[in-house]
Image 1 (cartoon, rainbow, N blue to C red):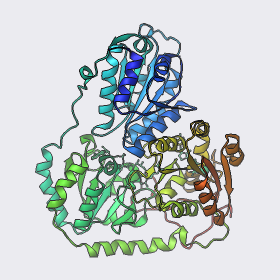
Image 2 (cartoon, rainbow, N blue to C red):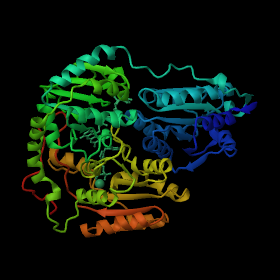
Image 3 (cartoon, rainbow, N blue to C red):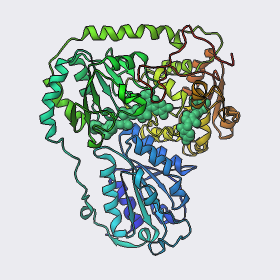
Length: 569
Ligand SMILES: Cc1cc2nc3c(=O)[nH]c(=O)nc-3n(C[C@H](O)[C@H](O)[C@H](O)COP(=O)(O)OP(=O)(O)OC[C@H]3O[C@@H](n4cnc5c(N)ncnc54)[C@H](O)[C@@H]3O)c2cc1C
Ligand SMILES: Cc1ncc(C[n+]2csc(CCOP(=O)(O)OP(=O)(O)O)c2C)c(N)n1
Ligand SMILES: [Mg+2]
């Protein structure tokens, strides 16, 4: 069967199971767009190519499937860079397709020519420049294997215009991927598995770390089996949230810079850390020299380059987490760790007093209350929360309690403001039956709010909670603590978000007192179509606790006790 390169592209994508793509057309990708009309593909027209990549990323994180974004050459391709880097840092499987100028023009500074494979080399797992129709199918097939296998990540395929236009014989089987198959669990695991079993059995104060790898590997049941059998408390990374139910008695909460104080203290007291699919990010460890000084470390990780990168592993177990846990758990002796669990419980006492939830309602609208009420309203339904980056992101992690995997989607590694609204659109496309909420700061919202038009045009029913504090809040917090409250460039104005929503044809609601939170959330949930809620919260509120960057994990700045109001009050 003779097909054009453009037809082969769609034929291959459809055979890979792709149903939805997010993109924006232009000259160099026009042949592909023209061919698309003949294939069963739902295309979402974004308003900026960064949005397309975040949508593909949100789609991937919500579903575990590969997300696909498409753009033209030059500025279309460069607009994708932030979204590709975001997916790279968080190991999210996306495939980005870009048009390129004709192969004979490459290197001539042709109109909208840019070396996008060069630009994205360090932020993709792999990328391709395809100059012949004959190579399109193989590139697509390989890209999908690479994006989703092992440690997932983004792959880019740049296809010249002539490769899209010319024709060749389409042979799917001959284009079978030649990339190495997903690495099997190496033998090293067999040798080191026994060491891990011995360490776990001997430990008196162990902590399991649940990272993003739990969700990627689908190891939720295996993780729970290990925790329950050996009675070990489980702490989460930001990206591991949802990998172990928040309501499980062994879940002690998030670790790290804005993790729970008792979790960080427990880590510093622990005699064993069992790290499951997490990479000891600096937001997690603080000062490496004083990190978990008494603990042996078992590191279960699929990417060998993560072993000993930040924290030396006493026992590395390289392999797929689910496989490793399935082999490890039955060999671990059941044990009782009541004394250790009681100790952690004691550490919690002080935090309960400091908790903002203990504050009486004095007419202030705190972001933490908004998030907690959102959780109350949505906890019994299938809900995905997609956050942006900043203070609201941390309050979400602290006050929305996620019981199921893939119910929190957030940019952790790159910390990309502007992520939430487009990623929520992608998540809703992947999981149309779920309620999808974007929880976003007034700063991040203004970065990609143009995608509201996308949600309207394609009838994508997302709800948006703007945590509006009139500041680039997280940066203001750093200025408050470390720059003597010199608020350089952090006070932030914005449009009237209710009117803005209405201008897009979306319902807008403003909320400024706690009593109005639940009715607004319920109103949004029952409204068919996108809703924007402008939560006008306390302006100079602070995320506690906070481990200052590079400080010892136990040297946290704690919420003043009793709570002291901040400057503006
Ligand atoms: C403002 C801000 C504040 C933050 N504060 C915190 C904080 O307080 N606490 C916190 O935890 N984070 C925080 N973060 C996020 C932080 O920067 C990191 O993104 C996060 O800690 C990474 O979590 P992770 O290691 O679990 O996930 P990833 O970075 O996604 O790493 C996952 C690891 O799992 C491995 N893996 C993947 N698949 C498998 C598999 N099948 N089997 C085994 N292993 C696998 C990967 O190779 C990788 O090493 C913050 C981010 C921002 C923007
Ligand atoms: C694209 C991008 N630019 C800058 C930053 C640095 N940064 C991190 S948090 C933050 C403030 C976010 O403000 P807002 O969106 O209003 O959220 P808030 O912290 O107030 O909840 C900034 C500027 C970033 N993470 N991403
Ligand atoms: Mg803000």
